[in-house]
Amino acid sequence: MAIELVCPAGSPAMLRAAVEAGADSVYCGLRDDTNARNFPGLNFSPAELAESVAWAHARGAKVLTAVNTFARAGAADRWRGSVDAAGEAGVDAVIVADLGVLAYARRAWPGLRLHLSVQAAAGSPEAIAFYAREFGVKRVVLPRVLSVGEIAALMREIEVETEAFVFGGLCVMAEGRCALSSYATGRSPNLSGVCSPPEAVTYTEEEGGAMTSRLAGLALDRYAPGEPAGYPTLCKGRFEVEGALSYLFEDPVSLNAIGLLTELRRAGVTAVKVEGRQRGKAYVARVAATFRKAIDLLERGGDPSELSAELTDLAEGGRETAGAYRKTWR
Image 1: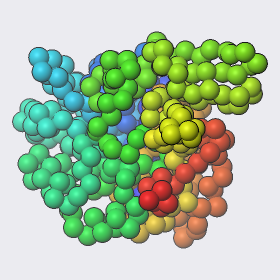
Image 2: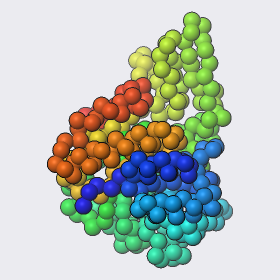
Image 3: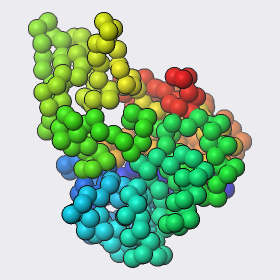
Image 4: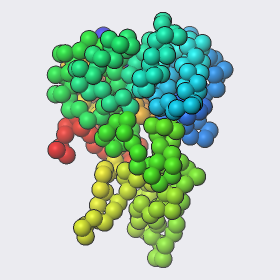
């Protein structure tokens, strides 16, 4: 069976663009903090979700709904409500990280397929077996800390599907544990669905034309005149430590694993996932079309790595990485 191509949808229009460009599945979230991309102007109302599911199903595509932040005490009804909205819309699966939300979904919607979010950070056979046994999870989105060899070893010991990220922005490599943003802004992806909220972001032109990016008033990076200025997130800030100026946590580069599709399929990966619900229609259409072409080429016995350079200009600063798949950083 061919690798499934899973693409992001930050809006109904983006969902349609992804499917028309060749996505097998799209993933999206509702317009609240129950999903980890809760930015203004993004996401779906319950009615939009239901309409989009019907549209996608008519074209043979699947819709996966992310309810992948962690429920807060006293507000759990919101997460249950998102699961209910997804179930009522007829989605093909919900992507969940929180144990309580998983338990509710299995109890209230026994026929609803459950996928384990990358936020759950399940990267061992024992952890994955726990989720499969206790909640009936059918697919695990793999943490972005595993090499291709480690994924292959993992697949020999588990009995569920796996989904691996292959393109887009990278986060600090400790899935489900991002707290840096909350220190600066009071909001973080895992609790409120927002990393570096736009209202906290500023760019200031300095003397001589240099540019400084700030998050909640904290200077995160300074760019030379004409140097591309990325979106300021704490994990990708440039700091001076012991006299050396560097990206302390992670360089602002993008994942591009199109050249590793052959190895990922050989390892046993079920689906490959593109990051970027906060991007636009043109982005998702182009990335989906390129990966569609790469997967089809792979199925014909070709080498998808020949397409690796086709998306380089979409990377942050034009710089790409194979991430942990190669583990050159260890």
